[in-house]
Image (cartoon, rainbow, N blue to C red; front, top):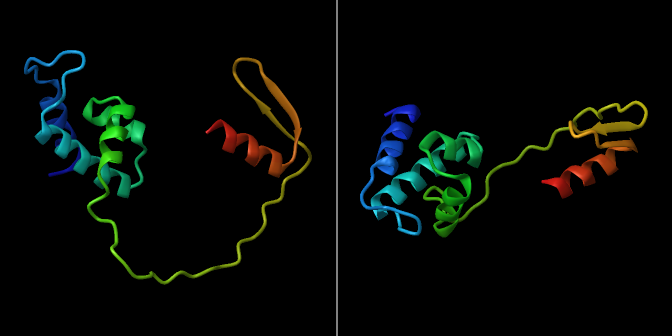
Length: 122
């Protein structure tokens, strides 16, 4: 079954009203399906927010469920071969300016300061 079909099936299960209300738990089978879908989509590179939107769950709910159990495909032991290659250095000209749509403007950043700003904002 393709991802969009799996997502639609899980979304239908989530939307099914079985006496659920605020504070009532989803059925365990729905949680398992959502977690399996989450891990398969994460392996493909999808973000938590994208996956949550696909199946109709808030990303925090989905993240909490997934965090409660480890990925079923996690390796148990061993190493994988890694190749380190020389990457060309990126050339940054002049000071960097960051401007937000709210009007906030930060000027004069170097590459290290920009990386630290992004790390703290994420």
